[in-house]
Image (tube, rainbow, N blue to C red):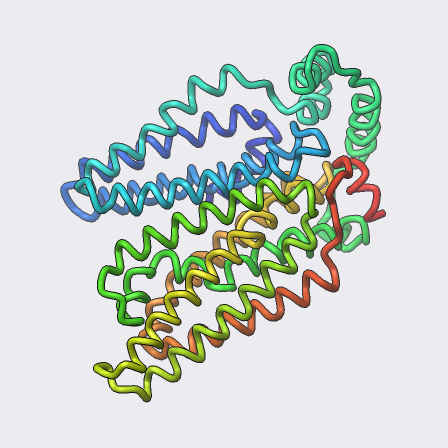
Length: 388
């Protein structure tokens, strides 16, 4: 639900307003969980959290893309997934150290800090221009680029793009099939759906049970280690994205994921025919652990962060709120489906489950090679004009 309303919310109250609204259900959700007397409060808290996160997951990457200079947009766009990965690692670590009620209270801190912090950051210049607040638009862009920077060229590009978007009437569903809309929609939504279909949440959410199935005794510690490795890999992506480009990192990432998932699937199939007390079973368990780590590294290296960056870059201004909301919704629905089916699939066949994820990852690699363009070093306006 948060994903559905996120685009229209940003359209009407801006990125800062949307984030401020999202922070409130997040705080209330964690408080409901921390004081829960029965499952009703837990469900209520989870629903409030989901609503807030749905808004944030669209608003943040779009805001970062709109305020970033072209030569730093990739690295700054990766700060969001990097922060998400850091949060997951902290959740793993704190979950081993503090009771769950205390963990829920700790969860209120980021959004409690976010609300006053929003008063100290500028609104997106592109949103201000779209709202016809031209004085605020130029002032915001000047603050973002530095007081000594000449922003004349960028101001003119943004004004031209916004004027063109504002001339258009409301987009009808049939008109989304135009080339200038069709390809950005396919790419933005496709990458975010394929990101989840590769099974990353199945591995992260069920890491403990997967490691137990692999024969690892201290599965919680192993899950923390995998999270930390994912954090380092995402950090490497942040550094490389504006140097190497989005497309090559996505190709390397999806190829590595495919090989890792294939190895995991083969190992789990082999283990079904090996006695649990044998040396071979122990060796296969260790190899499966390394394969899972390799999968998390290769996912974090590209497919974890870059689909959100590309979605925020390629969607045209005129359909960004509608299409961005839909892309975010598609991502979360896919995540929901993978998370809900993972336990059932793993109970059916661990090897079969990872074989399915391997096929998806192979298709992802083909999708990137055939269709995904390079957006490094281009302004948002140049990217939009390239689809015309």
